Length: 139
Image 1 (tube, helix red, strand yellow):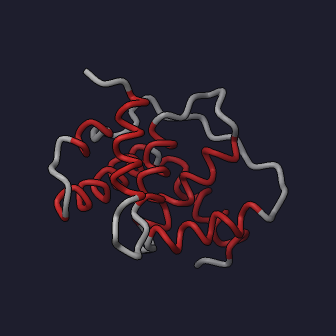
Image 2: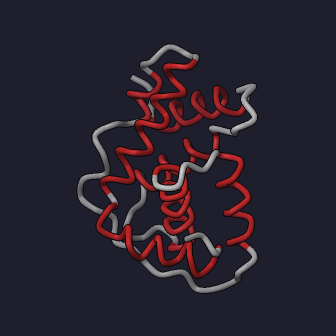
């Protein structure tokens, strides 16, 4: 059985080598970060990953668009709010994504993973939507 770090590296290789201009790597990173957040995680990492998932799942942003949003957020130099991770982090894991053969089905599974993790964090969805609105101008 592979460690989470091995799985992360394997999926990173797949998503970074992906030919699609949509940059699915960003969605994978956001799902993984939110799913593995702890109460000691830096608020910035949690907020960025949740905004990324919100933009992906609720607004249909590509990974490239989410990446640009992250770059815009990084310019803010502000103290980000703390969100306590939920007990349930979503039913789909990185292992489930990697169990799907490379190609369109795996790409779809990354999206399904994003939905699963976002649904697990839905309790702070309104606050994340408000942050996206106030910090990025996204309605």
